[in-house]
Image (cartoon, rainbow, N blue to C red; front, side, top):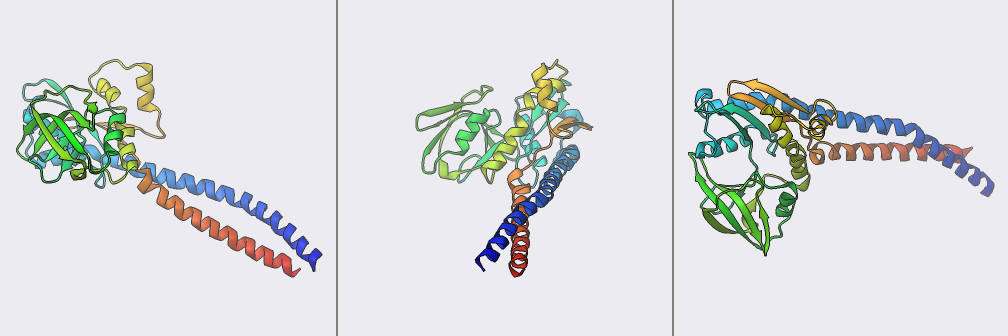
Length: 292
């Protein structure tokens, strides 16, 4: 009996290795299929983004021949409009709009990164011009601390927006990359701050898109790109961005994949199914070898 069981064990070990090799291609192609579906879904959003922007601006009364002049309240309101129009299933997927304002001056506006504050005198906090490392730090701000906000209050038809220049928390200061005149100061609690990101993965997807925006803005303005900037715009799997003309101007949109929501749940399900199939086949082979 001992010798017979030992033979069955050796045969089972060999079967385990063989099954693993046979299932490896199944796992590989399954992962690739899930990845490609996520990229395709994001790119489909990119294709529809210009139309969504045009529809939203039209519904809110903006006319192509009287677009906002840079720095005016309506210009900041346009930033919010673009942010809402380009949102993808509720989370941030930014775009750039190049247009001619009411004075026929070429103007570039990008969708903004806004946070909300509970029970405040203003509607939105504009974090658009803060660096990626600063946004990561601010997003990870611990609860219960005081946040000092310095910037300019802009009142529009729909919102009161704090265009931030500096944010201070417990002696640490973060400053916007584009200076804003500091005419207003507010203090809020971190517990009252509401970001549009449900998790850190959504923030990283947003940052992955906007890191190409400086190069994209130069391209939209007809400026010459460096080799690194050209590589940044074209170094993704599949079409990395789309430029499309609408009645308001030109929209630049780049596909973003929310890997946390679009990829990992499916991969987890694939891993569980594969593991269950592997163990079931291995147990069946062991019972078969044991009976011999």
